[in-house]
Image 1 (cartoon, rainbow, N blue to C red):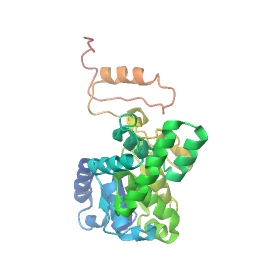
Image 2 (image 1 turned 30 degrees about the vertical axis):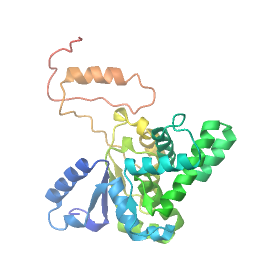
Image 3 (image 1 turned 120 degrees about the horizontal axis):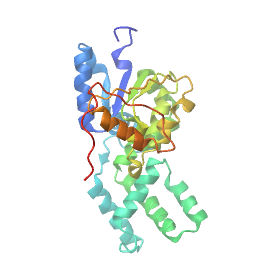
Image 4 (image 1 turned 180 degrees about the vertical axis):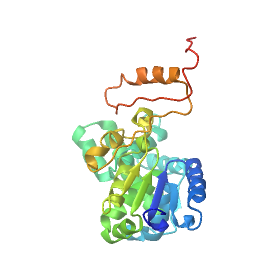
Length: 279
């Protein structure tokens, strides 16, 4: 803002948790001062809610849609299983919710999921496909979205309406993403679409801290970043402020056994510190 004359309202800063977003908001307000309120600082989900509240009618929903929590979703799934005569001892509601959530994180529609299920010939997958299909119909009928829909529907909106995408590309000319190693396929695609026009994208992350694969995080997003954005500049932040060198050396030695990672050497000014003891 000071050095290049970027407008505050052209900046979008995204992170994962409400706590992190609040901390980022405080820091941005302190750094920027006057005009900082024009910068969007929010989680992925909160950002998508703001966009969908304005434009989801383009996808056939009302803009006053309801956001279902996991208990609401479980209730919808339960009703569908009863209607389709699916034994919830064989296919538990929680398991069905996880399968649907994983599909949405990978941007797999009910139709695509169904085609894959029938191609595989897997009996359980076919049942899940039936539930997923009915679930989407029920959610639309209720004018409701679940947490995964917030990102998936925003991507769908951008692909269906180039004019809406162009509006947000112009609005968010500078995009920053925190904890990039935790992004899933849907989040990657959302950011890719938004940054596609001006390609001013700054991500912060550490592939060695990617521990959320079970929640859909795709480590390829950070490992392949320079292949997707070939003009990218990589700045390694290797100084550690928390640990002693002994701890860092041990951590480096352990994590270096991972085959797919970006090489880095953590160091600190805290000195060697005491030896590690094993109990």
